[in-house]
Length: 358
Image (cartoon, rainbow, N blue to C red; front, side, top):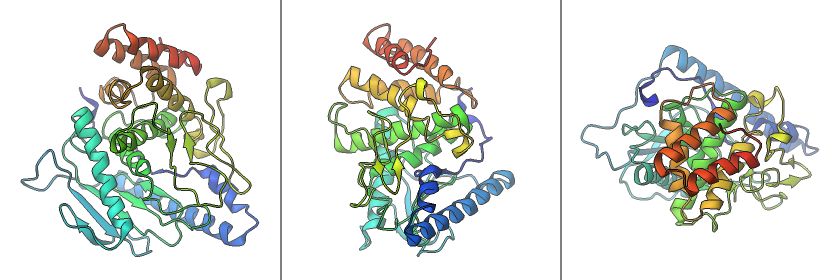
C-alpha cells in the first residue's frame, strides 16, 4: 500500500530554527535578545501542545475547493497581526493580485514555488498528493524568531532584526517546512533520533531543490545552504545549515558554532532537540549533496528523484534508521536507472558519510 494512504500521523511540530540556537540566545549578554529567545520558546511550546491536541482530537481533512484544477495550487495567506492566534486575517487568496505587504507576497510566491517543484518534477499534486490547499500565516507574534509547519499550515515570524530577519525571505525555508507536510503524508517519519533526523533532512533536501528549481540552477551552481539571507547583517555566518559542508554555516559569538556533523564519526548523542534531529540531519544531507555533485546537472532530476522515490514508495517505515534509508536509495537508484552512474554515486556517497547502504 502506498504510504500516502496512511491516515495516522505523528504529532509533529517542526521549526526551521533548532532549539540549540535558542539555548545560546537565552544566555546572551544582551537582555533584549535573551527575552526574545524566551518568548519564542514559549510560543513554540504553546503551538507544540496545540499540535498534540489536534492529533488526538482529529483535524478536519483538507480538500481542494470544488472545481479546482489539479495542476494549480490553492494558496491562502493570512496575517496574524502579531498575535499567536491562527490562522489570522485572510489577506491574499489564489489568483489574487499582489498586496502592499512584501511578506505576504513572498509567502504566496514561496508556496507556489514549492507546489511547482513537486508537480513538475515528481507529478505530486500538492503536499498530500491530492491537491491539499496551501495555507500560510505571516506576522506571527512579536519578533518571533522562527517558522514552522504545524501539521496543517505554514507559519512565519518576522524575526527580531538583530539575529534573524523575516522568515519569508529564503524560499528554501518555505520549501523546507512544506516538505514536513509531504513527509507527514508519505513516510510519516517519527520525529526523534535518526528517523527524526531523516525527517529534517528530507525537508532540507527538498527545500534546497525548491530554491534550485526556482533559480534554474544546476548542482554545481547551487550554494547548498539552508536559510541563506535569514541571518541579520551583524551575525557571523551564511545560513542555518550547509549541506555541502555541515558544521560551517555559522560561527558567531552569540549563536555559537554550527554543530552539524558530516559523517557518522561525529554523530551527536543528545537528549535535546528530539534526539538531535536538526544536528544529525547533516549526515544524510551531506550524502545527498555528494550524490547530486557527482551526477551534476539539475539535482531535482536524478538525485532528487531517487530520494523522492524512497520517501513515497511505502517501504520506508516511520522508525527508519539511516542505514534503512541508505539501502532503499540504492534499490531505488538501481530500479530506476540500472547499475550505472546513479547507483554508483549513491553507494559511494553513503560510504563517504559512514552509513552502510546494503
